[in-house]
Length: 300
Length: 270
Image 1 (cartoon, each protein chain N blue to C red):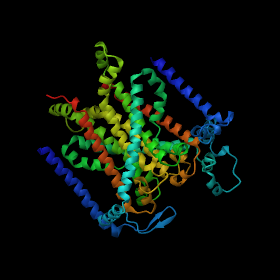
Image 2 (cartoon, rainbow over the protein chains, first blue to last red):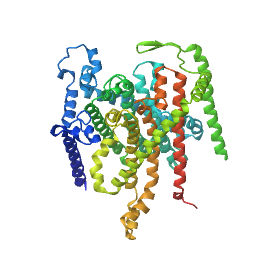
Image 3 (cartoon, rainbow over the protein chains, first blue to last red):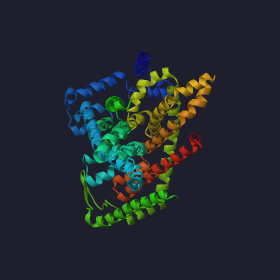
Image 4 (cartoon, chains in turn orange, red):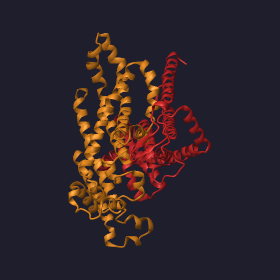
């Protein structure tokens, strides 16, 4: 079973990558523009980047600025050329793939470290007392409905062009995500274990450490994994909108995004960015999953 | 109305009312305390109301309603959400049901599902602009993609979550594969698929804020927000935020009540 799964998965990866390579290199072998219209323009190398161009972009972006000879013209001349050379512009700005990834991961981790305790706290308060729930829940529903990427500009007006307006949406998204799993984790046990423990005389710290934490733990941990995915998405979105570094910036090619999108970015770089994000996200989630399994081993 | 419900309602009113009053007072005080001239990147911006008072919010609202900017934007953006949602949900459910039912198909799709799961849909936008043009198709397809990924995973896990006992029992009674699929798998998987549709609907609203920045034309909520940030015109910005939040809230409530209605048969009576 496991072996079949592995080989089928691997073969589908290999077959699709090979098919893509053939398709994207079709323009070398015959005049693709003579084909019927949607296919003809879709097979152009600046629409469907050949696999070797993607690999080249990865190599260039990892090697960093040192790999390219310094340009003759001053930097601002290149500002209008980004559509022709996305990689070149990035390298001139000193962007590398690994540095961008590190910045994005740092933002995600910051969002998790600050946002998760906040959300867990709100969820705990709501789950433990009906009174608090009645007061807090309507406000929570109101606040949660605001998409995190929508209020970036408003934060910018208050705090200026700083790191804050990239971090606050991530913190907010993580906190809003963590409230509900924590609340349910606490609520679902409140009726049974809690009453039993209380009637046996447990309270305060003992109750929190021996009953509440282990019982609500699994729900909170699975919530954390989900929050990680949300933070990942929010971080990239925030960076695409308003950041001059990180993976989102790498994808849109630096600078303000709205103006940048009117020019065409290099699809090879976008694909490098997407693949990097997907693989890094998957690795982070696998780590979180292993940790979850380790921490909740007693529950099995 | 029971006592618990009445208490709940009263407390909700108190906390929301308190926030509304505190905001009103803060805005009135803010008119004198907060700066009206702020430094933005490379230049100063004058006449900024960081906390707009209720009066300026109402004036802005009246303007946005009278000029039909807000109603038109709501219609256009909701239309895009609906189109993308229907497209994405149909694709996602079809793929998720298929991979959930056929193990070989699941193994084949496995590596791609793993990659798709952690691809932030927003990152696809530059690629879609190149592939599908700088216009309507890219926006709708971006929403459809972000919906499809969530729904596909939801449908897949929903089908895999159907207890083996049900399947064995149906097979032992002589049901064919298609009958088992229609009468056992689909009903049992339905609640979880619906739950993923609800999550995806929320996500679609997150996506549109970014998707509407391309080929930005006026009647659209995403561009309304972007434009209000460019002036910047804070009352308009807050109204835009509030409108999106209200629409997210409403669509979520709609999904919840629909969910309750279509899964009524699941609750045991007596």
